[in-house]
Picture: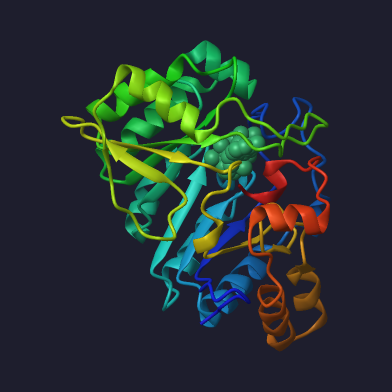
Length: 327
Ligand code: SAM
Ligand code: SF4
């Protein structure tokens, strides 16, 4: 079992498989693309398999595959097949923009990988295009509906963006009225790969909730696992649920159970801190996993208590792109 220096059990790995992406969401990276890593510095399929086995052996029971866009990686299904055979790994989930998931839906089902978070920040094609700089709304929407109707446990991630997609919030509530899906509204974070930084947010989780309350005054707060980052609600009569993720306000740090490994092997113990080590480098230098295991324990033994502490300790410059971190 992995436990950090504040007594928190760490059993959840967010594993980024690439920093590349076919969309250009403005809140994530600049239109011309982020400063992508050299191809030979990205984790190979063999390294991803080795890292996931090692982490599960150390006590990780949940892995979320993220990126960049996981499905731009041609060998992604081979990694997922490997994960589905790992004893001790209870949950595999994927965060995707759903542009390229269509051809893989049947195989995902076969592997029993049913937890799919789809990022969808607009329900109007024009707004979608403005945010993502690509014209793929219909494909994403069709794939989302396919996932829902084929019985996947899908959720929508919607980053609330001032002056960009506020009009679509109610439309997303209407979507979860009709479909048994969880829509989660995320606070924007300043990880956009540009110098557009901010230390105050107009649309924080409290503001989002008040906005929803204006049109939908009756909702019930749902109980969730202590480690959940979302505060979830249900409106009576609606098939789905909605939730708020205070990713900027950071109200959930006390029960944080996660560790991140980026597509280049950087180990991140807090989203708001700098990488603490590089596992790709250690694995390439040692045949045995012993040194990498010791490094993971060391990193978790020096973990900041909260995202605010990590930000202060590391003097983090917000010039990184979320595509390099994995969300
Ligand atoms: N490409 C995939 C996708 O978009 O779902 C996976 C990677 S993406 C970096 C992971 C998650 O991070 C997405 O839900 C995305 O909306 C979120 N994200 C990216 N940049 C963000 C930002 N600046 N603030 C809040 N969330 C962000
Ligand atoms: Fe790509 Fe996801 Fe970033 Fe959008 S949020 S640019 S889909 S990595």
